[in-house]
Amino acid sequence: MDWLERIAALRQWARNGSRAPHKPLLLLYALGRFQEDADRGLRYTAVEQDLQRLLAEYGPPHKTTPAYPFHHLTSDGVWEVRTDRGPGSPGSGVRDLRETGATGRLTPDLRAALRREPDLLGRIARLLLDLHFPPSLHGELCEAVGLDLEPAEAERFAAARRRRDPRMRELVLTAYEYRCAFCGYDGRIGTVPVGLEAAHVRWWAFGGPDEIDNGLCLCSLHHKLFDKGVLGVGDDHRILVSQRFVGHSPAAREHVIALAGRPLVGPQPGASPVAAEHRDWHARQVFHGEPRPAAGV
Image: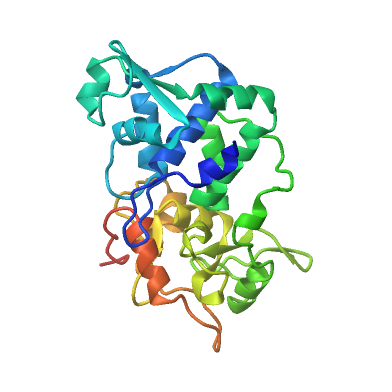
């Protein structure tokens, strides 16, 4: 059995390119718990709050419940649920899962494979991360689910997936003249830029192309906030700041809240600005809540 193919083929609710990382988040959480204690099941009432936090922080902008993946992941052959009544999930209702003592765990075949192949857990985790989340979030997401991964080795299953264009970073940074499109930061050590990254507006994992009109040159801070849905880009190429963001320090006000309504820095004349289709995808699938009014309005 090819577990990587099975993981890559997880059935997910989808409409118009919508993000639905509910099952991947549950699986990453289960892998982290397996690493900690391979024999322990995950009782829904004990892990519900953890899963809810993961969905709130790394899931789509609209509200959802961890009961959905806890029940529906059983259809993919990698997850099983038992209740006080016996094997089988009682359904996707929160009340049903709570009142029946529902407990989930990886299937026996998958647990056996993870014990038999020491590197399989890391390969599955990296596949889930790569297919469903941008690289800027991989490290903190591993920490959030308690996964301890070895440094990534060359993936043997890469042939089945799109390959990234290695020129993307240089093209995007050049288009924006090596300045953060949000704050103008342009730090270097000698001639080498530091803390500047090429951000995909529409995530690569969701069909976003490695092209300048899907990229922004961002400093590390604003790249992370952009991928977390705190920041966005409006139809007029001005910066959006989510009303859900809260920060009272001078640094938070200066580096985030004060950006609301500012025009992007760049790109230089002749370079393609962010395409409307990619801005729209980010606004629907990543940006959280409503944008703040422009500073001073």
